[in-house]
Length: 126
Image 1 (cartoon, rainbow, N blue to C red):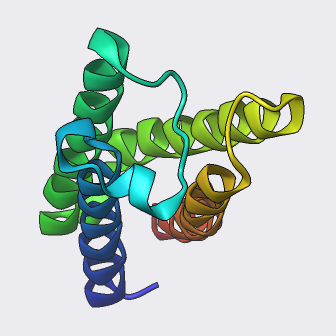
Image 2: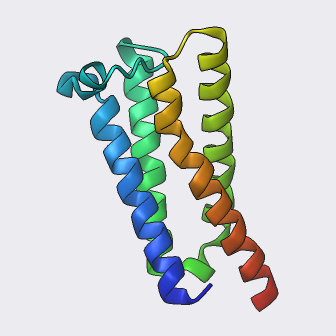
Image 3: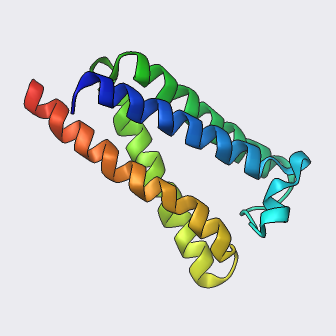
């Protein structure tokens, strides 16, 4: 993966997280309009979750400035994305999250694969 491709990957990932924040931030009401029932809904845990999504988005923005110099942040992001997918899919399976919410989390599957591709390529460069 070229450096410009890696920069673009992490810029797009930062934007994806930003959009997720806008959708899930309760005062905007976008999630409800889309039929997305996040977990947990309401209260401080929702704000903590949205904050975590925003912080990961900021990390991806930082990575986009120097992709091969921020491999540890990429690894952390990969772990976070895999955790999100596992939690949301499990929650959809047991009925505590909507299928629409699971569909939103599916973007993290795509980014997980791309992050793995980037990390494998980065290892070859060392």
